[in-house]
Length: 348
Image (cartoon, helix red, strand yellow):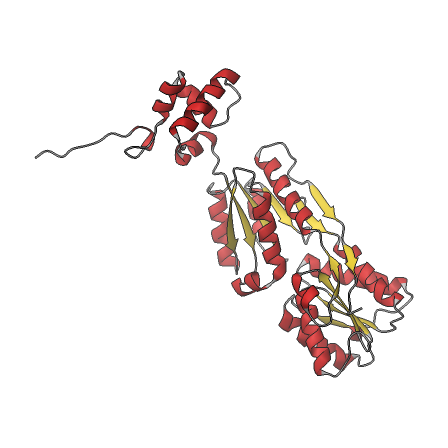
């Protein structure tokens, strides 16, 4: 018995409406239906309305693979985080950014994919993935000074926006919070409370947020007429364990400290634990201010005074700048710096 073959138009499955069926029902050509599906402006309003009505009646679903061949678009953007998976899923800041970018894409045709780059090998893999056209654009966050992706992707012409200004000042689109200003206000608040020995736990010095928040502390310290004492500085890594270890070092280096600005809320929670273990009361003995205004800032004991970043605004701007690049209506180096504000609670 000879094999039976079935020819399907437009890659359709049996019973699935085809482009040709939409054209017949709408009374237009197949090419006109294709233009409507691919959002071409070269269609009359009457024809567009007829095609859209036929699509709705037949419940036609466009073949995304065929559409991408015409438009050279995937309708997919990547959010790339250069951190170990453990930190990505435990740090509330990362979770807030992922949620915010996802929310900003809800009313668009774009789908989000989340990629993590734990080392140079994974960065190279992601660079190949993006250069080969699997995504329309990329948002990069949590960048370190040695990361390869900004140079590789911008050099390949991939639409790109950084979450955080670039470490080396290169010309590239980015959205950032006012980290210097926020840290400065936090430190000024501690000085204004009458604290005499205001220490800091910094973020990583290979990340621009860590550098900028340290700069804000330095400037407020100098503005208060005080010398920047190395004994009042301990470097952390934006993790809770790192903040606890850094606070313990500060207590050894400067046992007379009476306040500390901590460059992230998870580190501040670790610092509170170290202070409690050392028998220091917060805020009576040591006032503490964090940075981020994460959920943990409201639930820790005592509730944490902290610097709030406008994450909804930032994630909306990230998506807007990326979409403008994808559509070809934005310069590749548009930037936004969003204001921060101090939220006063029980720790200071």
